[in-house]
Image (cartoon, rainbow, N blue to C red; front, top):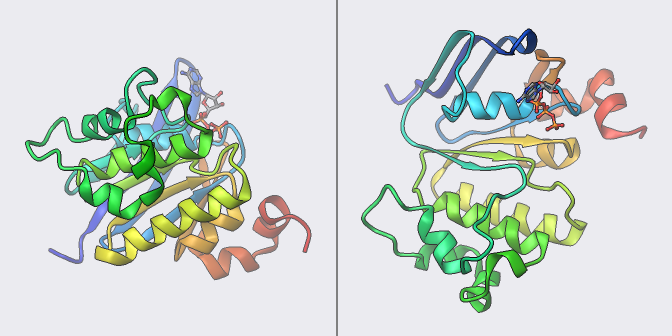
Length: 222
Ligand code: ATP
């Protein structure tokens, strides 16, 4: 039904050889939600993203996704020799319709860059292309891995504004993986805290921001 989660993860365990990267993780993402996953380096955030997107096989547990996921990967992973326009079109490789006009409308900064080689763009511009490329897949679920990593505050604000606007337009379900907890809790209504492969806290963004453990570890001393 419409009330069913678009992403449902239960008791998920992922191993790399003998190392346990995720240990019994459960989460829900409902249609129209924007949900944060925060946690320190090595907590298993990228592993969780890759499992949800079907890029790696769990040792145990269940992942159910309703509809199409698109990933904005950590490190952007653009095709450096190709133009911005070609990178965007590659996001629609599963679709017949490769019209980029909606993406350029949402991300006007990319319009003057459309014929530039992606590899020559700034980090922020590349992150915008990676975002646009994911939108070209017309996803039901957008998964964003470390959008803010290494970017200046001004470009992070710009990206966050575009994401917020895109989400507001049609309630696209978003799973936002962030080391920048303040940004994540600001953008999202709910979140999960992942530490050493386990969910150690979950709640509304307000609850998480007020929880001493989260505030001390992720938001800095007030
Ligand atoms: P970061 O923010 O640093 O990317 P993360 O929260 O995304 O961290 P993961 O990259 O998912 O964490 O890593 C979780 C754990 O699994 C870490 O201990 C990491 O060293 C380990 N790990 C990740 N990928 C591999 C791999 N391909 N082989 C072996 N161990 C891995």
